[in-house]
Length: 129
Image (cartoon, rainbow, N blue to C red; front, side):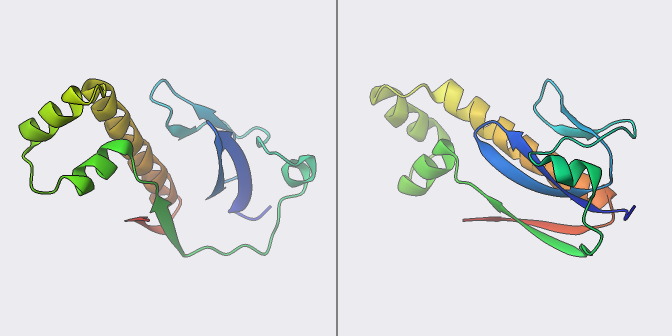
């Protein structure tokens, strides 16, 4: 088997194409991908789990980050300080604490995915859309 294989894993509502070692993936409490024992691979296609592609040679990877709601609001209100932004969002009825929590969770997940690729020897970079 080749050391790197394409795995399609359903994470939330989006499908992530992940190049990694032929190891199973699971979600932790923080929804981060972790490598675990060398068992069968989770896949959306049965043929991929039994016969991994051998022609994939990945050296560099570009991860395209989605814009979180907090990032969107921050871009709309560039001139406001953090406390002023919080005040504006709360006045509109937005749950500011939830926005921050989801933003931090999103960024943490991005970093975990990036680290997983780097641990597999693949140069990874995260950019915003």
